Image 1: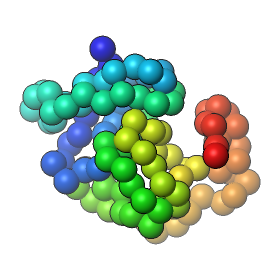
Image 2: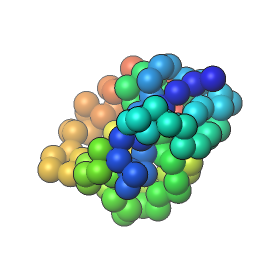
Image 3: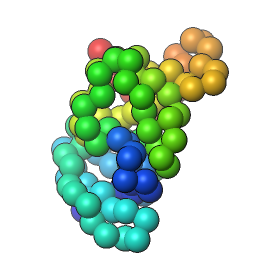
Image 4: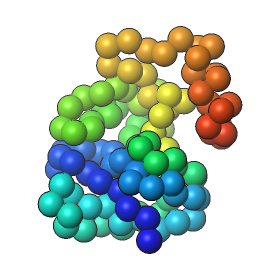
Length: 111
């Protein structure tokens, strides 16, 4: 079973502790290694990347480690990858050309 970590109870994303694939069932742990929940992963999420724990509507704050890190630019469903293709950074956004390159290199499917 795959593992993710949710560091702060207010986080609406968790971080992958290993590569995961669409269809995997992942366990989400807190910082004390207590399993908080399970979530079905709906797309490939590489090690170190984020998964949505709840549905985030466009314009919603993305919270990681208890801090606002960006804004959802599209609806993000639970189990989906949270990355440059659906989040705008808090202080500065990645230029479109770099976003395109990241999306291509990671094989992210866009809607």
